Image 1 (cartoon, protein in one colour):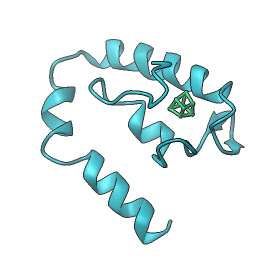
Image 2 (cartoon, helix red, strand yellow):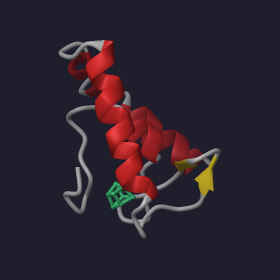
Image 3 (tube, helix red, strand yellow):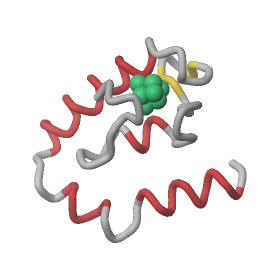
Length: 80
Ligand code: SF4
């Protein structure tokens, strides 16, 4: 993983991200997460699919699986 990717992930797990996850149950997070990954996997802005899941978003540059997990983060094209 490149240092730029590490910086993006570190930002997403910052003090804003972790408290947001405490608001939802694990099951609710899983449903949202899977729905978001399904949308991204069909999007022409997602990069290659690895083991059935998209990896990076060309629109925002984020790691999709990390970004899709957190409720307060959203698709830059407002698809979720
Ligand atoms: S975050 Fe939005 S723009 Fe990016 S791949 Fe997913 S659906 Fe497409």
